[in-house]
Amino acid sequence: MNKLLLTLPLLGLVACNTPQQRCLFGHQDDVVYGHDWQRLADSTYNDTRSSVCDLTGHMPDLIGFDLGGAELCRSRNLDSVPFNRMLEESRRQFLRGGKVTLSFHMRNPLTLGNSWDTTSCLSEALRPGSAVHDTLACWLVRTAQMARRISDLQTAEGQLILRAWHEQSGNWFWWCRDFASADEYKALWAWTRHVFDSVGVRADWAYSPDRLTLYDNTPEGALRETREWYPGDEYVDIIGTDCYHFGGAEGTADYLHRAHRQLGAAYALAQERGKRLAFTETGNEGIRCPQWYTSVLLPLLREYPVEYVLVWRNAWDIPTHYYVPIPGHPEADDFIRFMTSY
Image (cartoon, rainbow, N blue to C red; front, side, top):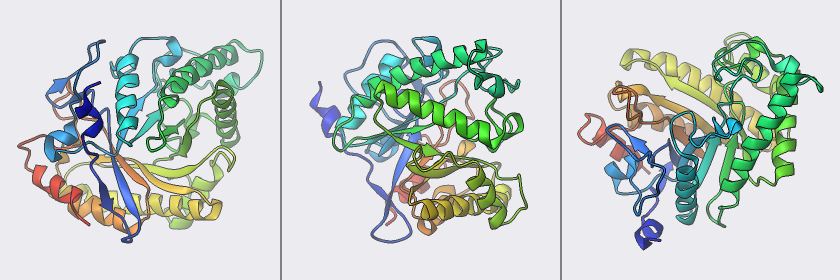
């Protein structure tokens, strides 16, 4: 292995709410493609390229990948990332002392449509003896087997985080609250943990709701929903939230309202249950808000003691879909300032 891959420094730590607590920075699919490049060949590479490193000279502390597609024994995930590349880049990240987080975008076990096929299926999937139950049982084992291969690569410093069935408080996935009850969702989590634990997956598990609109638009309403769908202390290590900034500067007030409400609820529940806190997904697509990283995101990280923050991916095939600035972008310097703000 090229020694450069082992010695390339991690990004370091972004300031959180106290000098003693630091926040790891993460980027989805950071090392397999970027805004104007991609490394999606099945073969491995002797070096590692990174969108974050292109700007800062340092690797991100955390890299996100998705397991969608493993349930069908496909060679690539739903974003065209070969699983053998995911394994290789996870190994390199662990050897650097970094973390990897894995999300699930599993297909609908009733229709075989994608995760966004919201045909109701969870009640049937939880009923032993049904064909849908048998399908999901098989898919969970296959997905766990891929996660096990990644978890086996962990080092003492490099660790794995699994983020199962995320954003259940929305209405866009088949496991979301509009298509399942809280009890069904918690049963799905318990089943998933049983399968992954029995396969031998070693990881920390993160619970990550998104928009919290089931109850009144208050901190109490947000906490009530976050707590009501919480899978249970025996299944969860990290409590977080997903929250995106839509639009430019005009969307800032709405984003900050939602982010404070959701992070506040996650923080309250984490303190109540003795769990760690994370900002599990966020970002501003195209970074269309001036100084978004230093003026919008950084104050949030200083207020809440999050262990890490993950921004979404830089797609190579959708010109406007990126969350880390590319070199030459008007917000590139602001991103670099963000990464050096202590």
